[in-house]
Image (cartoon, rainbow, N blue to C red; front, top):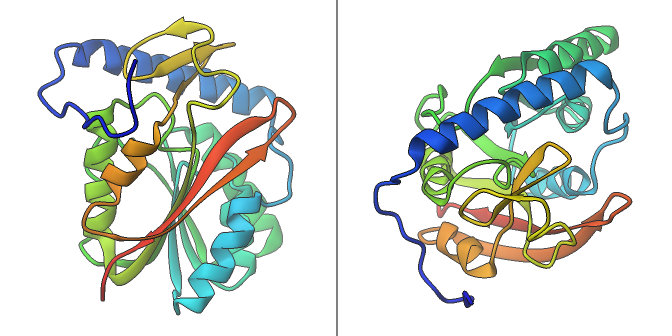
Length: 234
């Protein structure tokens, strides 16, 4: 039984090819889901996005990078609230739907980009004020890939920048349910999720100012998540 202080194993991943195959399958699954359900998550922003706007404004942020924007309900909300937004996702289907909605609203401060977060982020060093990722880190990513991604987020943030993310945790009803892959990743109804122990959140905050870890619930199941707010010293 794992405990909440066990360090992650960051050695080379002997099953990396299996993780690549899982990620490819997941991309195809999300492409189909977005195509079949153009308003899959509705039009209203998520509760974490509402929180993020207040935190980003208080920090004086002007531009926001959203990772895993999907169909873009939160990116649209950030743009509506006056931020310049870069919305990224590995689904071009979801991003096309986002572009159509942004154009219909006349939001010319929102740009989209297809990005696979297993690769280095295309953004330049110290180029954004804030990063937002709602349930992106708890997709089908290995622990090594999550650590690498957070390092990339640190690179693209300006000094004093803020990173807000949410993840499903091991108290979620779907933890341990369905197809077990590895690294606490379980696939249920075709969707794979990496369920976080608290120690992983703490590890990811090393070298950051960890401002808040807040538990919340979302959806009908409901999904059980942590909302994490951390910032760089500036």
